[in-house]
Image (tube, rainbow, N blue to C red; front, side, top):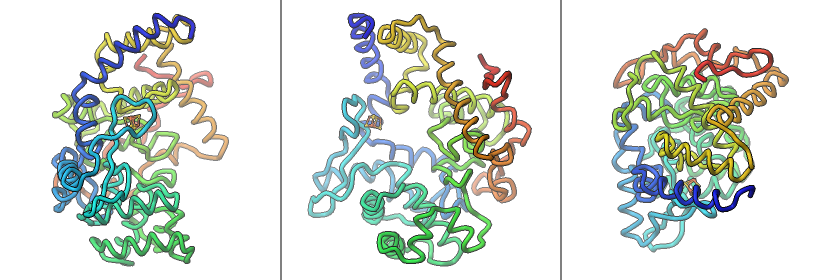
Length: 373
Ligand code: SF4
């Protein structure tokens, strides 16, 4: 630490701001990320049954509120420290009817992928699927979506929880179908020659349908990491519940917020800060506290632009890696069905144009240039 006293003072102020923020200080420790089930479903943006619906009829049975109720009744933990040193504590411990451990943590994206996306509305089944993914060593999102694609292709019925569990166990057994599922949704879609495969760069989308929150489509398409929601979340700008000003069903302004937030997240990742602890950073004084922490630790004189520069540099390196691996702007696209199949209940398609996607990150002189700075 270049300046321990200044760092300690600023880090205490930052921790206070994180605890006082309603999202990171109350919602996350209370319901965890599963709080988003009700919110995103009510926005018509919860991709259900392999993204053929934006509202899932069984959402109340798999909501964060229901999960907290079950955990409390059974003697599990609704608040749990998922990562060492965390002051947010978004994690939980889900237990069975006898109070025995099943899994930790049961999170929003997992509940969506292995639940709503597969038409499954039973939290015990979802918790078992989460345990199996953890035990086998699989990502729950890509695995849930792989099962959903298989169901959509007619291999199993949507809503058949036992079939989903058996399919996942086949991954551990190494059967032909298990190996296919373990390779993710793109491999499953190719095998069944199925057209509705919600992936970008072979990575599954997350629990925000890009037809109902258009900015997520920009993030999914242009993030060097594939369809990663955490690479550039755009909820705050799109949902009225968070004070959002954009129309989530329209393309206006979506590219700009995705780009700005992708740079912001890459900056936060570079600093080692969790995005769930970041919501208070929208307040200028809290962002100033973060700057003080960084400068006190490193002995630097960074301003906001230098800090954002960390994110820009990171994205530049990632895009260069992709370019050298043979990826082009043709890989910065959503699957065609998002542009052709309207998503109920809003019945909109993804309407951000290709040229807007291509202008998200403009390379000038070998550097990713952010027009917003
Ligand atoms: S660091 Fe982030 S993901 Fe980990 S427990 Fe804390 S809030 Fe949750």
